[in-house]
Length: 418
Image 1 (tube, rainbow, N blue to C red):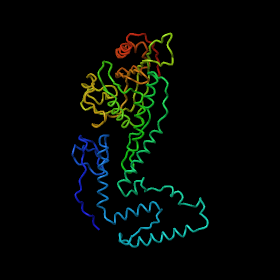
Image 2: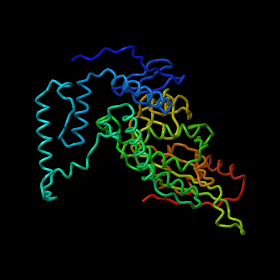
Image 3: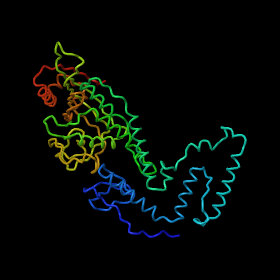
Image 4: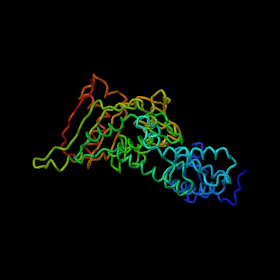
C-alpha cells in the first residue's frame, strides 16, 4: 500500500529573527537564516537554536504520523506491544489492517500458550527463569523512545531523558569547601581540573551523540569555577589575550576536547606574594589579595589554529617549527583567534609559560602570561636570584607591586624540580 500524499504540509522555518546553527541528519553544521526552512531531524548546535529545533521536531513528527498508512500504524503498535509483553502480542482487528495472516495466527498461538503457562501451580526456579532478567528491561511506554506513537509521548520521553542527564551531572559534582583560598590554592585546584584525562577520540552512541560531552562539560565547569566572571587574560605588557569569561570558556573547551587524555600541566617553580599581616588582623577574615607567579609546562597541548598567521600569546603560540621565523619574532597579539576551533587546531606540542595569578574573594580575578623562551622554569642551573633578575620576571613582579599600591609584600619561593 502506498503512502498517502502530503496535503499542504507547511515546512517549519526559523522564526527566531536571527541566524541559528543546527546539525542536519548527517551531522554537518548548517546555518539557518531567519525565515529559512529548518531541516528534518536537525539537532541544535547552539542555545539560540534549541527552541526553533524543538518546534520543528513537533511539526515533522505530527506530519509523519498524519501521512503514515494504516499498515504502518498497525506495525508500530505491534512493535510497542511486543516490547511490553515479551513477544506475546494480541492485535485487535489484525485481519482488517494487515495482509499477513500467518503472523496473526502465530501471535494468537503465543497468546494461548502464555495463558496456559500462567495456570501452573509452581513458579519456575529463579536460577532457571531466564525471562527474569528481561522483564526488568521494559520500555516503549509514554516515557520511552521506541513505543511513543504520538508527538506528546515523544516529548515526554525527551523531557525525562533531559532530567536524568541533569541529575547525573549534579550528582557528579563534589561539595565545595567554603574556606578562604589564596592564589596558590586556587591555581592548584584549576590545574587539578585541567589535568583530568578525557580522550580526544569521538565516542558516539547509536544516535550520533558524543558520549564524552557530559565529562567535558563537567571538567570545563569545575575548571572555570576557580575564575571570576570578570576574568581577563593579559600579557605582561597589558595586551589583552582573552577579553572575558566567555572567550575563556570557548578557548578551554577546545583545548580539553582536542588535546586528549595526554594533556598535562605542571608547575616547576613558584613565587607566592601576600601582603604583610597586620598585628591585630583576624585570621578568619580571609587572606585578601594574593598573587603567585608560576613557571608552568604544558605537554600535548592542542589549541585553536589562528585565523591570521600572527604570533600568538601564551598557549596559543605554536612551536617555532609551525610558524615562519618572521612570525615568531612579532609581538604578542590576540587578533583573529577562532577560539572554538572552527578553523582547525594546531598540532599537539609542549609549551613553557610564565603565569601570574591574582586571587581576590576566593576567585582568580586576573591572569598575566608570558612565554618562557629561555626555559628558566626548567633549567636546573638557574637560581632564584638569576630568575628574579630576568626581564620577564621583573615585568610580572611590577604588575604585582602596582596592584598592591606599594604595600609591603611577603614572598615565598618554591622549586619543584627533581
